[in-house]
Every structure is written in C-alpha cells, then in structure tokens.
Image (cartoon, rainbow, N blue to C red; front, side, top):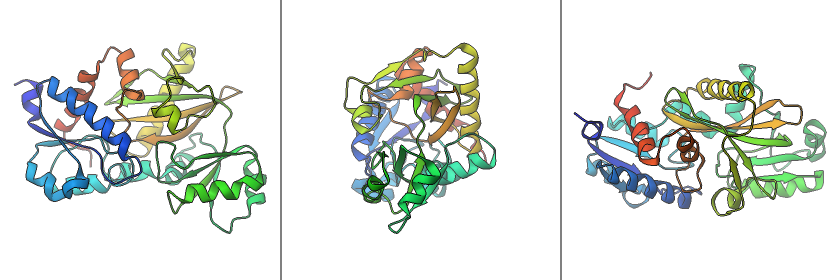
Amino acid sequence: MSLVNDLGRVAVIYGGHSAEREVSLKSGAAVLAALQRAGVDAIGYDPADGGLVGLEALAPDRVFIALHGRGGEDGTLQGALELLGIPYTGSGVLASALGMDKQRTKLVWQALRLPTPESVMLGPDADWQAVVERLGLPLIVKPVHEGSTLGISIVDSAEALAAAYREAARFDARVMAERFIQGEEYTVSLLGDEVLPAIRVEVPGGFYDYDAKYLSNDTRYHLPCGLPAAEEAMLAELSREAFLAIGAEGWGRVDVMRDGAGRFWLIEVNTSPGMTDHSLVPQSAAHAGIDFEALVLRILATTLAPREA
C-alpha cells in the first residue's frame, strides 16, 4: 500500500482558543491544502467549534496537530488523544508540557549542562533593581507559557521592568526575566531523526517579534545560515541534544542565539511550530530538498510508528 492509503483519514486540528489562534488557522489551512493535494483523505477541525466530542465524531485514523499555544501545544490535547487512542503528530504529553514551559525547559537544560541564559521568575512585588543587578541590561521579559513572542519585551532599565512585567502578565500568570543575548539568532528544525539546515534570522528592527515573524516582508531568512561547516554541525548537535533532553519527538524547532564570542545559547523549543508561508520549518525543509507536501507527509508518517513510552 502507498503511504497515502496507510494514513487513512486525517484530521488537521487548528484554531483553538489560545492567543495564537490566528497563526494556527493559517498553519492548519496550509497543512490541510497540502494533504488534500497529495490525495490524503484529510479534513480540518477547529476544537473551538465542537471540542473533543466533535473530533471523535469525525472518527479520524490520525491527527495532524497544527494548534499553537496552550490547549494544543502544552500536552492537553496530546493527553486527550492518548485517551481516545488516536495517533497524532509531534511530541507526547510530557515533552509537549515541558516545551511549552520555558522556565522548566531551562531547568532541564541546566541540569544537563546545556547552555541557556540565566533567568529569574517575576512577580508583582519583585525587587526590580535586584533582578537587573543579577541579569544585567538589557534583559528580556516573557510569559512562561506563550509562543509567537506574545507579551515579550526587551528592557533597558529597572524602571521599565515593572511595565514589561505587567504586559507579560496579561498573557500568563507566570512571567520570567532572562539575560538578553546580543548577537545572531538561529533556528534549527528537526524532522524525525534528521536535523534540517539552520536558518539565521535577520530583522531590520533587531527584535524578532510577532510582526517580524508573521506580517513583515523585511525580515530576512539566511539559508544557508552563513556559519562555517564545523560550527553549523556544532549548532545542529546542540539543537538535537536540547530537543531530546525534554523528550521531544517527531518534529519541532529549537531557537538559539549566538553571542559576540561565538557561543551558542539555547532559548526555547517549539513542539508544534508554525506552518504558514512565513514559517521557518517549511523554509528549512525546502532548502534540504523537501517540498511542503513532502514535509507534511513525512511529519504524518511519524504517527505510523509506535510512540516512545
């Protein structure tokens, strides 16, 4: 039998209720269209419309998760699909929950002596000056459980830190401050056992925020990334270690900074990356000779193998 027949009926889940809903709708629409072009019996489903009952009524053989953010990328959906006995793309319950939690991901990396910038948790009564003295300036403030750079601020003074905290707290009850790494930004995609070519992201404004990711046509994506072969191999291996450290599998993306001394610093893992026309995984795959249809089929093919316990 062909892979398309082996896949059976596929539900592409997108939308949802998270702050990343609009991006998720675009990702899901792109994935769904590609699967249908490839001849897969695929249907789109937004859990905001009918919850798990509506999904179960579709009787899918497997699910392509194109949900971003909480409710889709944090282990919640993965746990529900485990209970329903429906194979799904991406990481399992534990790795999804860990990957969504930036602070606990960093704790795992630190325990394994993987390089990641120092951070502290913030609260409404934090000693802002003490945070600045510990992390230095500038520093970056971010919600622990959000993606797509929602609620993130770069802070240049202790006075601005309280306002940055309040902005991040609009998105999440847990907020962290992190030492800011001044330098080049890289993103490394993983597909099964393969590490795809690294991308160097260049933003005219210097900050890869929501607009730079999804709206701007000025953001530049360098492929090849420009690193010497030995350094790109080092980056690939570090990204693989970071990905496997939290138990991630199937596919995903690791974001990394490189400082002025040439050292790489792990920033975060994305276990359900974007699949829009601006997204990074499709760009990296294309550079490796994998077109969008082939990419989504390879991601879905990972659901045919038994999931790691």
